[in-house]
Image 1 (spheres, helix red, strand yellow):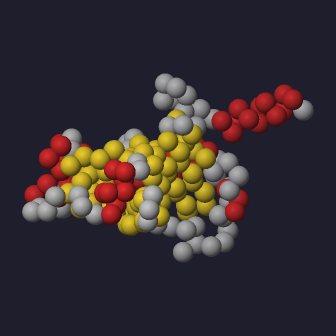
Image 2 (cartoon, one colour; image 1 turned 120 degrees about the horizontal axis):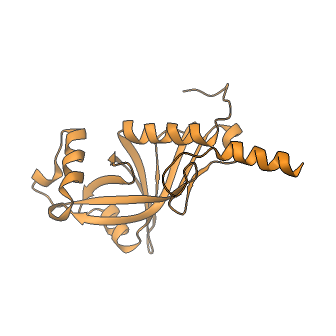
Length: 175
């Protein structure tokens, strides 16, 4: 694990690195909460479809019960130095009702299809409303890369923008 020598990445680099990790990684921690029992956190396999995280768990699990009762959840990729935390609301799909594209992609990534299992499974989809990404102390300031469901490095049409360059220009014009 890398612990030193971190340099600050700009918003575009952090976004690119985060999207690459979401495409590449297998495991994600899902945190849910139950009003009477408190927080519950589990590692799950996930598939990133380019705009949302898809996971699967037993339909009668505490995770499934919590996500249905209180859909606000947090997700985190499992690296304490290169941190990625997502916040959003869980949308639950019993296995027979999950969109085929999502279930097929999940099965293709892991070689396991919950729809073919005996027990009932629940797919959970989370569209991130907030994404935080930082690599060490230098990136704590400015770690938000998605706010209110919008990627901060893109304009409303999805085109890349250079917010750091724009910020520098405004600071220079004020100075």
